[in-house]
Image (spheres, rainbow, N blue to C red):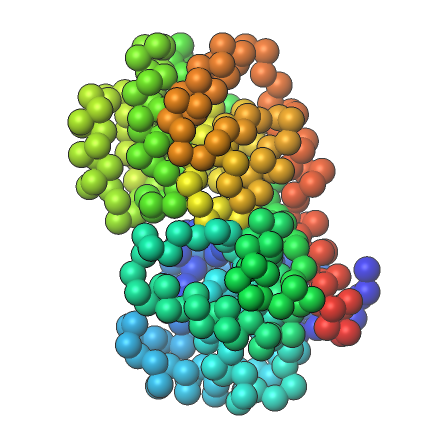
Length: 375
C-alpha cells in the first residue's frame, strides 16, 4: 500500500445516525490514524455521531445551511471553505452532497472529486419530487467526478443502468467496527431486562430507520404469522422515522399487542446483543446493509431479503428470501428459532472480520485514491 500522505475533505449533510454517516466517521478516523490530513465539511453541524469524533483531532467545518431553500449563499460558503482548504480529494457522501460537490467544483481548482453511491434500485415514487429531481440530476452529472465509489455491486450496476459512467465506478464494501460490534453478555442481559424479556423468549429484531424501503409493513405481517406459531417470540423495530404512527396503526390492526415493541433510537450494540435473530425486510434501495453486517459481527443469525448485496454479506451464515414476502420471512424466522441452540455465533462474526472490516474499507479506499486518481 502506498504511504504518501494525502489531504482529504469528507463532505456530508450532517452526522445524524445512519449507515453512510457511520462509514464517513470510520473512514475519517482510519485515514487520520494512518497519518493523512482529514477534515469533515457538513451542511449542518449536528448529529449524535459528532460524539464519536471527540478527541480524534479531526476538524469539522460547519457550512451553516439555513434550510432546504438556502442554496445560493450556502453554495458560496461551501466554495469559499473548500477553496481555503484546497484538499487533494473532496469525497462526498450521498446524493445531496454529490450535487453540492458538482456545483462547487468550478470554484475549487486542483482538487480531485469523488462521489459515493450508497443505495441500489431506489423506488423514487415513494419519495417527494425534490428527491426524484435530485437523482435525475445526479445521473446527468455523473461524468463530473473523477471517481465514484459504490458500496455494493448492486448499487454500481443500478447506477450504470441509469447512465453513470461505468469506467469511473469502483466497488468498495462498507467496513464494520468489529471492536465495537461484538458479542457482549453484560449488555445483552441489561438490554433484555430493560425490554422486559424473560430468559426463554426469542427476540427477533429489525434495526433500520422507519422508511418505506425498509419494508417494515412486511416485517410486521411476518411477526404476526411467526408469533402465532411460537408464543415465546417477541419482535422489535429498532429505529425512528416518519412512518412511526402509520406502522403503529398497522401493528394494532394485526393484533400484535405487547409482542411488538417500537424502541425508537437505541444504542445499536446493546440492541443487537439483546436480539436472538436479526431481520432485514428491505423492498428496494439497499446497497450494503450496515445493520445486517453489524448484527453478524455481534454473532447473530440473519434473515435478509434478496435486495442489494444483502445475500453476499450473509453468505452461508444466513437465510435469503424474496423481497415482499411476509410468509417467507415468517417461515425463515420459525426455522431459525428451532436451530438457535446449535447456532455458532463465531461463524457470522468471522465472515465480517475476514471480508468487511473497517480496516479493509479504509485500505481499499486509499488504494482507489492512489490507483484511480494517480496520487
